[in-house]
Amino acid sequence: MLKKEVIKTVILLCVSNILFAQIPTDYTGYWSFDGEYSDESSNNISSVFTGGTPIYGTDRNGNENSAIILDGIDDCIVLNNSQPVITGLEFTIACWAKINGQGGGNYNQNTLFEQRDEGGSSTLILSAEVDNISKIVVRTSTSGAFTIAETTSLSDGEWHFYVGVLSENTLDLYIDKVLVHSVAFNYDGNLTNSVDHVDIGRHRCCNQMLGYFNGLIDDFYIYNRALTPSEITDLYNHNSSAVVTTPGLWSENGSDIYRLTGNVGIGTTDPGSYKLAVEGIIGAHEIKVTTDGWADFVFEENYSLMSLSELDAYIKANRHLPEIPTTEEVEENGISVGEMNAKLLQKIEELTLYLIYQNNKMEEFRKELNQLKKENEILKQQVF
Ligand SMILES: [Ca+2]
Image 1 (cartoon, rainbow, N blue to C red):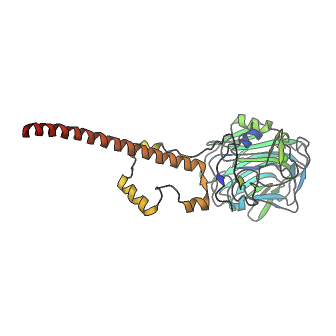
Image 2: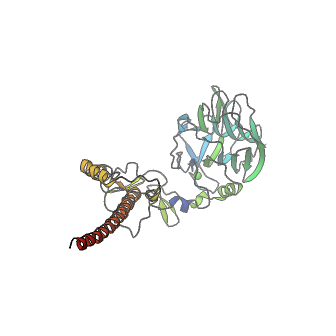
């Protein structure tokens, strides 16, 4: 375990901004399908492939081993241990897909994504093709209508970009960055009610397998907010082939190297939960740390400053300042640079308040002393 010399900090490497400068990076989940089917977002959404061994094919940019092939028979990816991935009142589902043929299952549906319960009271499906229709379907109560935005499907054997967006009152379907259908939507229930499954590439309900995607899927994004049309255009224009995946430890993007998953240890084989763990001293010209909260509250009118006698009693009893960790705690857990700087500033500000208070007291005493001196002089003159 790392102890003293772990600097638990946020170093602003801005890696994600460099890699995806053109796309919104606040996705809930992202699957590049570059030879693997794991979620590459910081949420690490559990992703389980079913239907045998996954096979990867050539993506829209001609890169081999860079898009997942689903066989339309029993292949799909089960997400998040059946817990909802879409969790809010707004969402965006976006992916590239290339249909190879008729989808599998009872409905022959080329399903891209589904989150739903067993009975149909919370239903969310994005389909590239069923009965020659592409559509996004949402329903939020058992008695509610299925709200559907749809258009003629594109079973032309080419790659297309499918996006379903639910904003507060509107359900939109985009294909190849063009808004093809928009319909009004009213919530009458809960989209995350009793979710039974979340799948990429399969539609199922009520113990029936209704639609397996038959073709290739690539660059799958899930956002828990409604992307704007310009953000959808950015996603469409984003060329993931600019990011070169190097077999082995690191990937390359121009002169940068990076990892999207896992943690890095230097001088340790166990980085724990730290993205970067160093068993040793880090040298840097400057380190920028982001932190939540600063210590200005000390100077608020209602700040409750401990009296000096209380502080004296606390120190005698505990042998450290209030709110500052003990030697034992620091040896066990290290310190968080941003948090500790805020605490130290808080103590400096409290010290400043004590000094101001003491100075004011001294000023009072000085005045009293002068007064007493004057009175003393008068008394002396009267006596002698
Ligand atoms: Ca890919």
